[in-house]
Image (cartoon, rainbow, N blue to C red; front, side, top):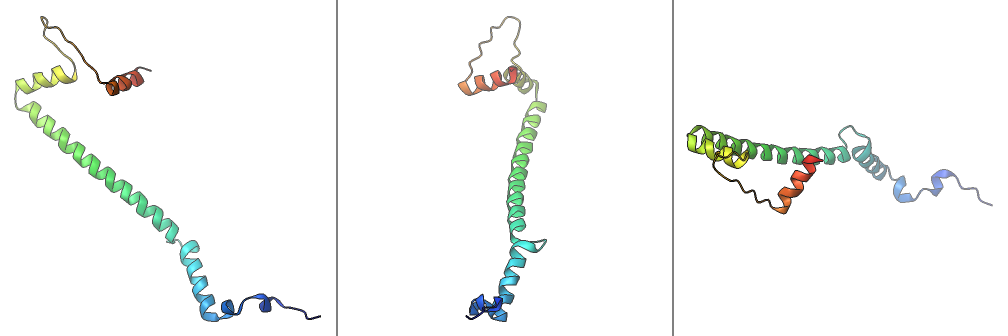
Length: 112
């Protein structure tokens, strides 16, 4: 009966010192290093999300700045804004509000 030792059970391909070094290096890079590929992927995904948020907020700031400039240009624009946003009216006027289904859902969620 022949007795097998542990090194004999390892395939000859993995006993090669170069292959072993490359395998250990890949394990190190993929899992063990502080800048491993898994954390790099997560960081890149987070960076993409933050860039999208930055773009959204820049567009929102430009839109609000445009509205502010429009309000500062004259009383007609200010009156128009007050009528549209805050539903203000003159004493002798009637106000009819027509909501889309989306606006109705938004208002019902706010009131809950």
